[in-house]
Amino acid sequence: MRVSVYQNDDGYVPDSCRYRVTLDDEALETCVTADEEKSEALCFERDPNGKIVVDETGEDAKMILRRGVVKIWQVPEESEQEPLQETA
Image (cartoon, rainbow, N blue to C red; front, top):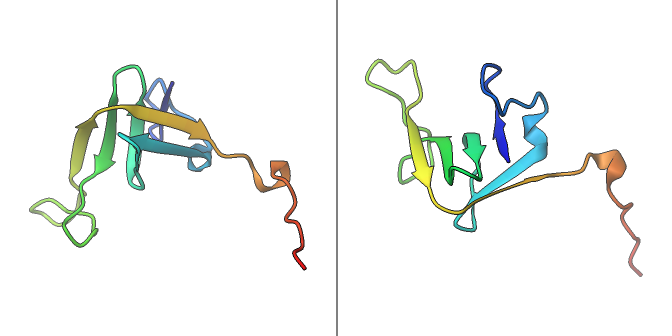
């Protein structure tokens, strides 16, 4: 499976926020394109504090291509989820 936020990508899905991606069992929060068959994920680069790194101009975020075991799954919409059970 492949998912992407980019409209010109073959894996584009308009509701990409409904997908979750892991790389080697690590959740990827800043992933913009992920491909299970190619075992790669394109993500915003983050500094040691978790902030997104920008280029020298300060206008564009830097990207990093990460490789490993990629897993993609779709998260159900709220209306599709089981209702919360009240606890005593």
